[in-house]
Amino acid sequence: MGNKGAKTRGSTTLTSRQIAMLMANTNYTEREIREWHEGFLRDCPNGRLDKKKFREVHRQFYPQGKVDNFCKHAFATFDQNNDGTIDFDEFLLAISATNQCNLDDRLSVAFDMYDISGDGFINRKELIKLITAMYDLAGETNRKGENKPKKRATDIIARIDVNGDRKLSKYEFIAACKNDPVIRRLLAPNT
Image (cartoon, rainbow, N blue to C red):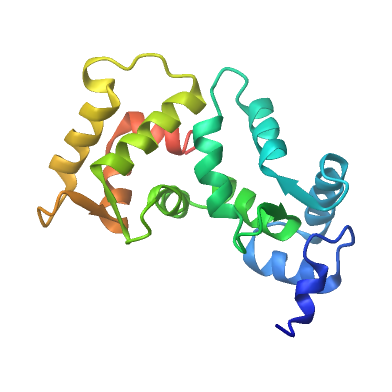
């Protein structure tokens, strides 16, 4: 729609405008952005990351886990323009959001990924999907008793659902995850 910037999406060249935008929205330096871009182009020579390659990359980072369930939700979240691919800008913003940000920001990204209905809340069913995907990704095999996804989701909602509507707002979700050591370890392992 007349957006000149749209022509560069998926481009194999990195413009000074892109670098400025990425520096403003991440904690990466220009040098780091250029290094990420080189690596991105090695894996995606056409400047686009499709769903298949996205899963392959995650399998490298989580060799013991099952990545498909997680990747389905993550890809949909990071493909901001819904074109079925992730360009370098979308990729680096996603990497930054999941690796550089503080715990609240990382949990906010997780919330956005699993608010499948897009209604601004995570219900029990969505929370079960999130917990199951995180278990799969981390290779977590202990899913009995307190660690059963349905049980954990039910307990989290019962404990944190402030207004009794049986779903979690983003604020409630972040508080719940920060106070649940298992979920916190799975969603934000480096904090």
